[in-house]
Amino acid sequence: MGNTTVLLFTRDGLGSAPSELQQTLAVKYLSLTLQSAELPAKILFYTEGVKLACKDSPVMDLLKELENRGVELILCSTCLDYFGLKDQVEVGIVGSMADILETFQKAEKVISL
Image (cartoon, rainbow, N blue to C red):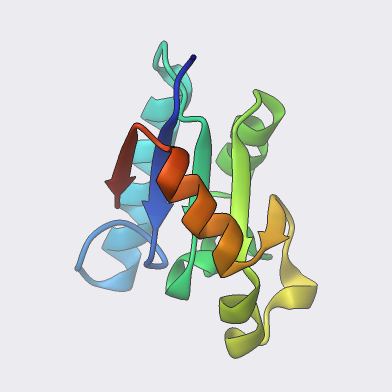
């Protein structure tokens, strides 16, 4: 069946910490993910996590490389609307909560970051 691991970003970085540390950790995590033998099938972004896939994100190059290597990136359209960021999306596809729910239901493993 292949890898159905899904990563979930709900913050503008990784964990509960000052913003700069969250973003530093996200860069390190995604860099190591790219170097690993097994990439996730998808990465979901909702609430503040959508900011990571928008203009000036510190992880933009990493997300573009993940997408180029076949990882599907899905951003919550409601969240982008809330933050006024729909015109600043630079990677991934804009999806609905139904797309996110379907991804969760099909995933063997969801890792919330």
